[in-house]
Image (tube, rainbow, N blue to C red; front, side):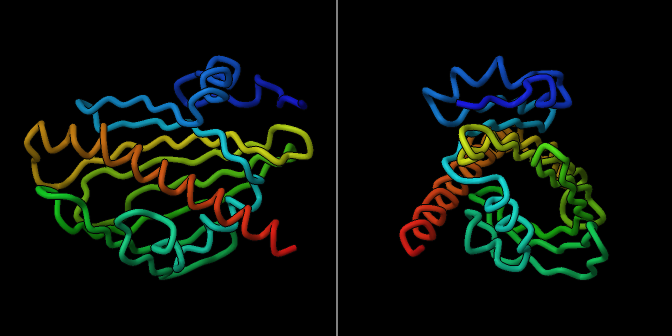
Length: 193
């Protein structure tokens, strides 16, 4: 199997792919959370190409078909690799519905790695910033190492238990469901071809 240059796959926290890949091969999804700071990192190993995942994630207005709890994604403005996107999501009690607008920036590196980065513009959240990095691995790039990093805080002070619920349970669940959906889509497309 062709492995990527592990030096190129480093998160903002400095963790290289080499340190998580053995566990990903076993578990498929590895989650690290810090409910006290509102941060979560989810690493996943997906059996589909980075470009097919990127295509789904940048089809903003169809994201509700793929992301658990997302009711609406509306593109206000899109210019080049930047888009202003309004989201509305229904979260479990006590969080309820939240709406916010992010500026999303996309990029692609020469090694085939795709990135989406976003920052909050306005809405029911006081903080929302993060990134998704999709790096092709495996023979012919038929697998993807996906790293999802997010920092999110609600404008209203939430009870510590509610914040922990959102960070420990909800964020990883959203990504796990998205991963399963993306893999199912890739298998459907492969069988149709």
